[in-house]
Length: 283
Image 1 (cartoon, one colour):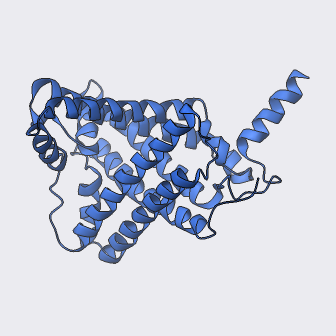
Image 2 (image 1 turned 90 degrees about the vertical axis):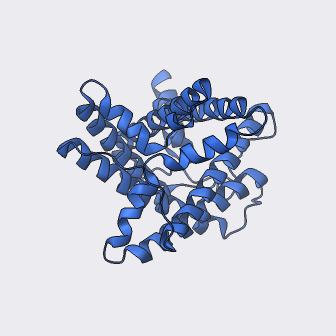
């Protein structure tokens, strides 16, 4: 099948995954610190806001913002041109719709990080999520709109967990000694990230049920929920390590991920290697 992927989409994709790796490294590191010293965990924008006071922090924020925008562009192009070969049937359209949604989320996050670099307030904690939840609830049928978004976020979290358990990420990961050695960490990263995303969705669902925007929250609120549970500091530490695993997964994707629409037939992925081993064992 001929490639319909523009050549520039590959470096754009790699820049996007690198930016995500930096984001989740910062969030995971601060969450692990909170688990160890008993402090409060930071959400994504709160954690990134802390970078501004560090040496080269402002420059790093601009790099992250640009990378996240690149990731969004990659998702939009991948959906439009079906660069991941999802197909045009119902399941393929659903998967490509998911690419658009993740693109929109990362575009918004990229704009938010650029705002931090320009000196705008991060809002701290979960107030950003609470603010837009309150605005949505003021719309006609706003409560139901928020509930629908909550269901979508919980579904996205469940998808990440499923993707990790079923190792679906192997479909686009090139076979190398590095990807094979790090596979357990990559799997744990997807499961941890999915758990956090699902908690964010549940918090938003609680806000919809009670018509109380203050119950909504982002990653920071999700981490606080983990910390407040029985054995919360232990659970927070485990989740933090998982988030660092997800950061590692993004870094590995930045280096070894393929674009199916551009990769040649001679490129072997982890999924292809696993399928070949299973076939050999069965035979």
